[in-house]
Image (cartoon, rainbow, N blue to C red):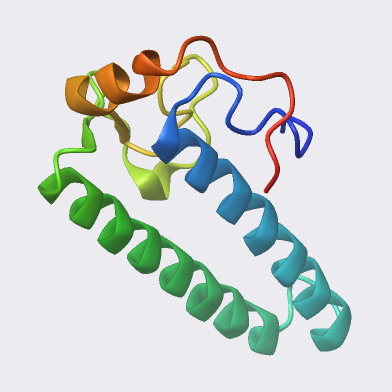
Length: 119
């Protein structure tokens, strides 16, 4: 994943949201693995399913709302948010959504992205 100051460097909103939430989910799952004694325990498997479902449903709801607001559109790569990272897509990295033309126009009004963006 990009460093915290580059997460929105290419100005792809869904990609930035997706990568940041995937990193947070991984950290939470790692904590659960320590708590429940490894990935093979039944308790961890249940925990993992709940955490992953919550993250994927929440991100999908946010992306759908941003699509409705004409800020995002479905990515041409046809990625599915639940299938994981798709590194070969520069627009979404697996999120399944990318910037709408409307959002790209708004972002380009301000010129090129700055080197450092606060989170």
